[in-house]
Length: 126
Image 1 (cartoon, rainbow, N blue to C red):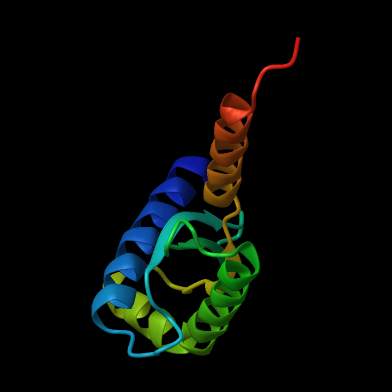
Image 2 (spheres, helix red, strand yellow):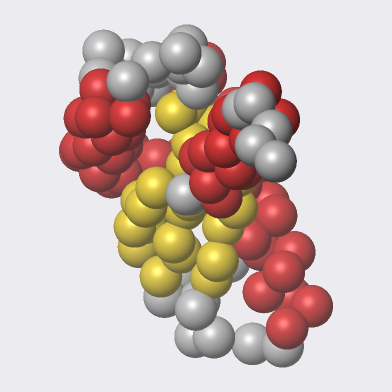
């Protein structure tokens, strides 16, 4: 599949899953999740869905990690239903397998911001 078509497919999958998860998925483990990116393999047999779990910015890192892990488990258990939804929405022959992973980009950005604030607030030593 050519790269433009793969990009369009990834974009449509991201949009469809975002709406589906928000409105249709009834798993209590999945809450406050944002799909940040979708990568589709060259043969379009697998789509890696990167997610970020939004929560309290002051939340402990370990608690956020546990929340994300639980959310990914909930999404993985609903992958079959999501593929069925994609099959009815997309006009392609084979619906890719869905693999969910944590997008660490947002967390890294928050961490860098926190570190910069700490540096700014430290007293200057001469």
